[in-house]
Every structure is written in structure tokens, then in C-alpha cells.
Length: 396
Image 1: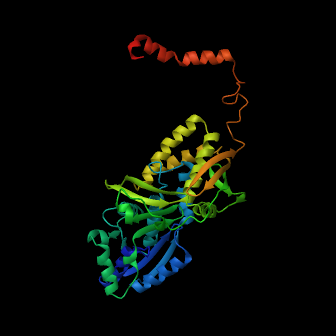
Image 2 (image 1 turned 45 degrees about the horizontal axis):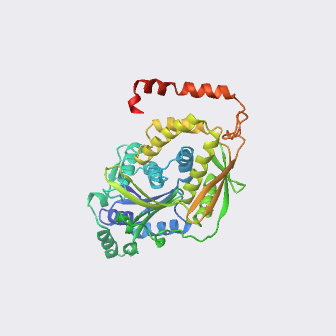
Image 3 (image 1 turned 30 degrees about the vertical axis):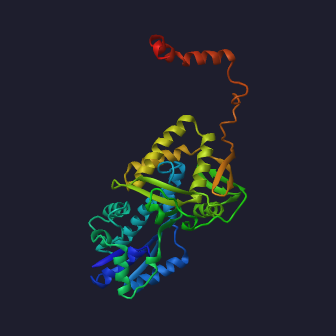
């Protein structure tokens, strides 16, 4: 049997490769779908380890650009933060990783796809659902889930068969991608505790403060501190490098999982929080009241559907079309003030700034209407309330 293993290089997928190759005698191909979280050195190690574990073949599939073009830019357009907190880093990455792996398995004519998800998390849903849709009829193998394996059981099996690694020493598990890093384990398992400084992969190295200027064109990041980026991934990386040095973007997310239990995860995501914060601020200047309102409604659903493994639901393409159209006047540069562990919005420079109006300046003088017209407007606006309370004076 020819099997493709969704291979991250972690404990569960390492166990899966070795077990299927050694115990089952399957023809195993390890596929690492990269969404911007692996260094060249890590990918080289992944390849070496895959062959040591018994894989017949290994491939790295870089889906970072596809991930940006088909999801991340819409998440920026929509200012998508789950529960107003989490930039949906892992949730959205998994969809594109699983689509890439399913396409690869289909191309090489694999009989099955295996992944290392447990039965207690969201990723099992994301991988399984995507495989079933993209590669109909494929068998899905999940040793960790089906056998309810513990970390120690997997470590013992690998060590007993000549593959040693530092899996047992890891207090935390990390998922790293272009849109942030999630942190699980350790103090996260205790609802009353937060993460120590040492748990974060990127420590605070800057003191004081500085201004960051992010320019958007039609809602899409265009320049960082005046430097134009045609490659939007490099623009995100530039923002990340600046913000991470201040420890910006750290937080704790608590939410409802797809399977119904509550989940808690720490994260560090400087670029997403800075880019979304800047973009939302620019929209306040450039969009009408109802554009902002209705865009927020569909964007909230977009984020929920991404999290719930419904990216391939056709309505998502309709939501993306609305989000794209809403950005036609979201142009300008946002100035942010950065400092250790936080940032604030300063102002914007935009030709589409609706605050700049010839009709009047808020709190100053009116130019587009007279005092009598203002009085008439206020009286008419109060009419429904005056009607109601004329009959219910006891409620005043």
C-alpha cells in the first residue's frame, strides 16, 4: 500500500512514518506542507529524519504564497480575530496544508493518507474533512487517534527502534507559521496560570519605542516604513521582525473547539496583530458606517467557518468577493507607536480620509447645514421616543 504521511517532523508524525513502514510494510511518502513556519535548516532535518524513519520518499510543499492569496489577505480585509483575540493562525494553516497533501497524494496515486492528530483536538476534523473532499475515497490512517497513544508510548517505540530525539524534553508544543505561533502545554493546562517569558520563542530585545508606518492599497499591505513590497509574504515578515523585538502580539485564547470542548492556547503573532490593528484603524477613516457594520458581520462568519473547517464551503467565495469589494477605498498609511509588549495607533495619511470633509469638523463648526436644520433634524429623530413616552410616562 502506498501511503502519504502529513509530516511535520514532530513526535506523532515521526511515529506514524516508522510504524507504517516497519510494522505494516507500507510504501511511505512523507509530505511536509510549509505555510511559512519552517526554516531551511528545519526542512533539511525533516527530510533526513523522514528517511531515517523508513520513508521511501520525502517532499516539501511550499504553500505559503497560496495561503496568503487564498486566505490571509481576506483575513486582513475582514480584520479577522477569533473571539476578538486570536488571529486564527493554526486553523487556517491546516486547511491549506491538508489541501496540498491531498493533492500530492492524488498525484502519486496513494492509497491512503495518514496524519498524527489526536482524537481530542480540532486538527483531526480539518485534515479528515479536507482529505475526503479533495481526494474522494482515500483511506485515512490515524494511529495516534485510533490507538489513543500517549506521548511516552510513541517515544518508547521510536527509541526502541533506534530513533532517538528530544521529544520527551519538550514542555510546550509549538505550531509556527507565517501568521503566528501557537503554544500549547505547560502552564496552559492550568486555567489559572499564564505563560512565563521563557515559553515564547521570541523574547523582548528592544526598549523604548519607535513608530511603524504600514501602507495599504485597496486593503492590502503595500509598504512597510516606506519600503514597497511586491511579495506580501516578505512584507509580513518585515512587520514581524519589527514587532516581535518588542514582544508585541502575545496573548491567550480561550474558545470552543469544533468537537465541543473548551480549548486554551497561548500565541505570539506580532505581524498579524499589527497589520490587522493598522488596517482596522484605516477603515475607520475610509469606510462608511454601514460598510464597516456589514463587513464586520460577514468577516465574523468568515473567521468562524475557517476555524470550523468550512473553508471549502462555497459561501466562503461569496464572502471573499464582498470583502474584496469593500476594500476599494481602503488606501493610505497608518502610523503606529510601538513599545515593549504593546502598541497604539497614532494617525493615518490617506487621500480617501472621510474625516476630511467640507461639510464640517466634528465638535467645531458646521458648514453643510444651518442651526435651524440641526434643530429640525434632532426633533424628528426624537419623534419615536416622544410618541412612546407620551403614553408611558411612568417609565421615565
